Length: 217
Length: 217
Image (cartoon, rainbow over the protein chains, first blue to last red):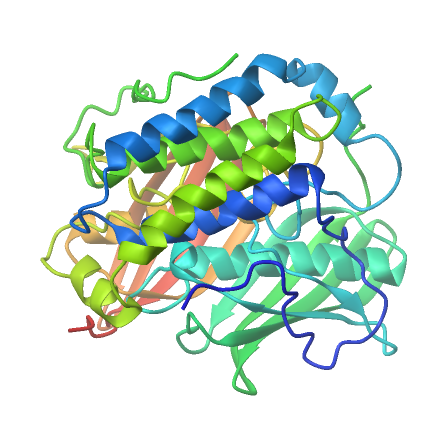
């Protein structure tokens, strides 16, 4: 019933190069992995289990206070987190430093597309037992962006259209794919989809503009 | 620098009835509030602050293990969380039981629209210092759904189009609004936008189909 958070999700046959940050076993990634388990455990508990939630809150707050005491100022942290030209470690989809991220692991495929497999739990619920439509949008927006990087020309989302074909299940492996379809001047187009049990459940079309916000320094 | 997580966000003049679950000061909501602070603190820390992240991971894991031991089985928990006809307490946008949720508080306005104000921190970052496009999609998908409920006829998202007009800043109050524009048979249309500093930054148009998945029992 509890997932083994240290085991990587199955890759669904996507054996190409990893296009997102590799989680480390130690350091902040280990604490984030624990925080992610906590977020899910709180949703699986709810109230009425007899757990002393005031004590839980107090223990977590004590950890947070200790972290906060030693944390750099935000501008300094921003400059640090955007240093280097690698993939981001902190985004809410793939980031090993972000407990909001499921996280989704994306790999490049020989045909130029990208793909990953992820199983979502209660933190991502919309309709009963199913994935929130906005979470599917979040996964697809990010995947289209990574597909653009993999294709060699990326930018910022200008327009994104999602089509929800059928409900997307929680607790089952979802395959998320994306590929770039065209680059015309600064206008980049990419498409993607989420499938469950071999059937598409959500599709996405995105228009991206080839520009980037400056990295803080 | 640390937000006071117990203070409600400003309402941006949206003084109508609250349309989302009210966070409680105690019980699981208090633990979730603490977990939310922890997620942000981990991102604000990163590696290299000298914090003993192995110890942090161990402490959090101990709390999680205790919760997991007493948690109901998932089907039982699902039935429980969907009991009653009120607003959801667990969704990833407004849910006081979900640490993924910022959370966004939405209120109904006299003109039939809904609105809320939220300030987002590092967990929701996409481009440097700015909100991830997929997070804007998540907030808007949910807000359009709540707008449909407020208008009296709601359903599941069938199609959602987002237009990103300019980068959406972190650390500044964002106003999120939505309103239903038409109902034709089962087809419901709603629009919404996110604005920052009085200017729209992202707009959304959604088509919803008037149906609901069965609640688990």
